[in-house]
Image 1 (cartoon, rainbow, N blue to C red):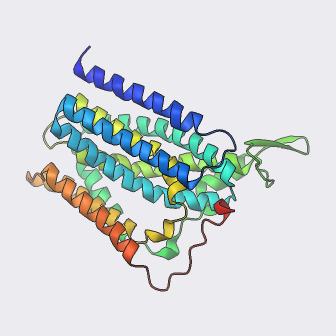
Image 2 (cartoon, rainbow, N blue to C red):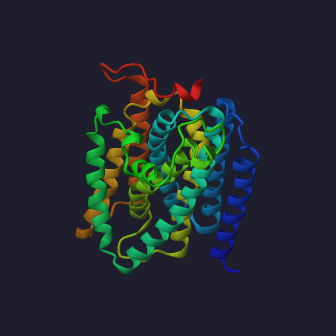
Length: 327
């Protein structure tokens, strides 16, 4: 068995055992996830991710390990941005605490499947048409600028999305409380509950977020003028999946502190622009070292979190977006 096969095997075993332990045994139907439990589970996923970083360092060397931690930090920060949207979805559909954990569990498992598909397609596209990376770079610059200037008035409304309109147009949806069920019988007919709709929208939302996520991780890992290696591929998959797996516990940990990170999106936006420009300047054979990327990402994300904690937006009303989940 080759070294890369061993790495894939280790990652697969860790992934299966972690899923059974954290998302299976700790996610019983209707069980309420407390802040304390969410903290322990978040620390569990972060520790597991750091442990895999150490394994890569020992097994494959420092460069793949640093690429992994860079990609993981970016995916983790983007997942925090996802949580803001998730909270709006759960609040809009009045999902209670007991149902939220199971809905997130299914949504995350679907997200993993979609990420694997999107990553495979992205890698295949880049290997066949390398200059598509420049398109990805331009897209990230555009996305970063748009995110940086996004106002609070442009808040995501789940009820106005195309996916919600599609579901309600095609399928009968009940307005009755879900009570942990995905379908319900009303007047002799089977209807979908709001919980089923939430899971469907969560999966669709992650597909949208993957459009930013995949170009980012390819921009971090892919070296100019070189094909993606087998170890690069495992770095891309593992960083993405570890970040997604930590979403559920991070959601319950951060749901009461969303308003404390007002300027995080600006930090993420600057990093997206930086990675996009890093990909674009490679046209002129200007290569940004990995350590520079690491410093920029850590400085931007850490700085935006620090600034958010120590400053608040002017004329911002109290945050009531989490009322449904805290009752």
